[in-house]
Image 1 (cartoon, rainbow, N blue to C red):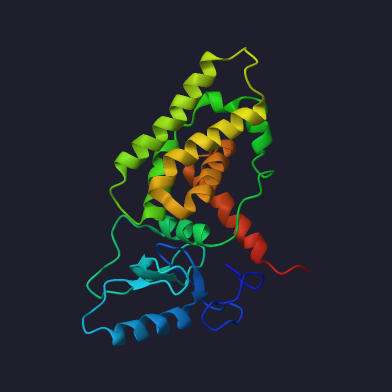
Image 2: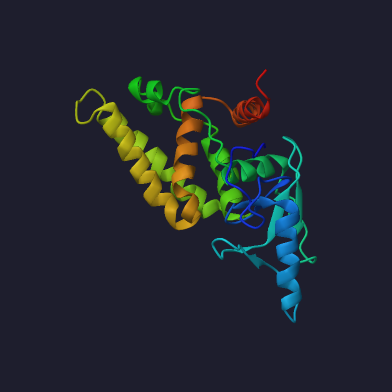
Length: 233
């Protein structure tokens, strides 16, 4: 992803080149800068490190994600004893960088307003549970997220059931229903996804509003990023 309009690298204070992200806090750096930082920290310790603290937020991170080209990515682990988990696919890598960047799909692209105005939330989404599993794996960097998925999916399903029961009444406007949904989802997700909670809630809403399956949604996101990276003629 292009970084020319982003904040400068926190280490060298220059525009970010060879964009890289720490895998837990998602702060972005130049890859050579954060790699050098990790090696400096390693040299200061008498034992091999399994993680490094982000120079910005002091969060522990296990790896540096870099070299993403829209399909593949590389992951530099702080501990050489760690290998990339089999479940962490290239799709996980794309979403990891997606959360780490300030790129977001425009709400008008999937028409979030129409989603709420026409009560499309009542129809459910057969792909949501699988999509939630991947997203939560990305933001928590954990493979076993079944309990979290069950909890958050349950909140979405419960909201839909409640709205169906009140269908035909005028208990709330479309905007009030949306605010209620986002508040419930934020409360459910925040203990698990922490500082990514607001972004996570927006991503869930956009996925639901899209009406697409996971593969089609990913394709739209990739095209959006590619379009932003293409220089204007």
